[in-house]
Image (cartoon, rainbow over all chains, first blue to last red; front, side, top):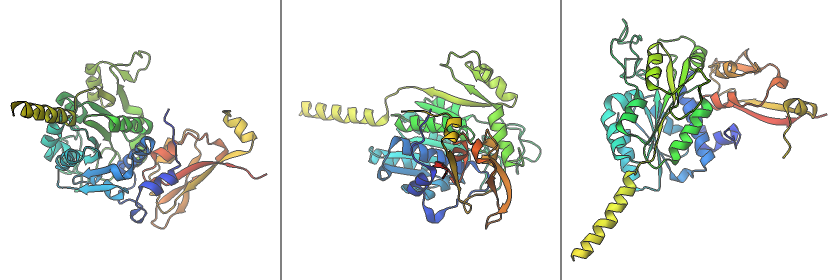
Length: 293
Length: 86
């Protein structure tokens, strides 16, 4: 059970820029909800606002750092993780959070994403996945599921889609979680875990896009869909009673093809991060240099 | 620490105070859908931008689960315990 320490009003006044509220997002957009969860996670961990840096690329989700009372960098399309890597390496004391969309991370910036996972830089990447390019009018993106309609695929999408969480797991990320915007408490818990993680934490938030996504017309239909059709993947749980918990990946993917959404903590492991290894290297190199002298 | 059940709290005169910032609300209806006790309801009242804002139907039913606070994309709802003035 997560303890909600401060009231929403206090949180809003502490972390959000009042002159920019209400946010620019469409009614029912998931970006605001993710902002809400991130604020609650930061507040629960008591991270100082002076040590927080939010980095974002281009897209609807990348407008989020503007609303936060902390340092924010709004960078070029797809290169948010590259900038975040630089910030974190320059000053490892900072907590770096990357807000990114699916078009940002899975299309133009996929290479940066995979390389950051390979190096295991300790940043927290929060991907708000609305399964299309929402800002430019709902074009097909690499995460649009097969058979879905979009502006550029009026006769259904025939391409296979990426599942970014499992892609990150395969690349070797130390923490991966996948939730929808309807899973509030789970998402807050995962963001908290991700912020405490020494290594790259990737949190994928499936988000509705009531304007551009052609799945449903009503905002509340998205909420019902996320609550009813999601199934949990948890390899470590010894609970065989629940019909919504799957331990086997094969079962999960079978369910996904039938229209279910896989959610859950995909992986949580310890792995040496880049900063530790770099510090070790620095000490070792200095000792060897002195020895040879 | 003494924990009260909701019934005992109601007897002792505790109720929930809802604060909805009307200007921030965009009428998405998430709070209405997520509420397990159907406390919130769509009203006929519009805010200055023309969005339909929710209204509080039956305050006494609220169990302080804070689901509406968590789900709100604009952080517009705040729930606090308040005492009824006798």
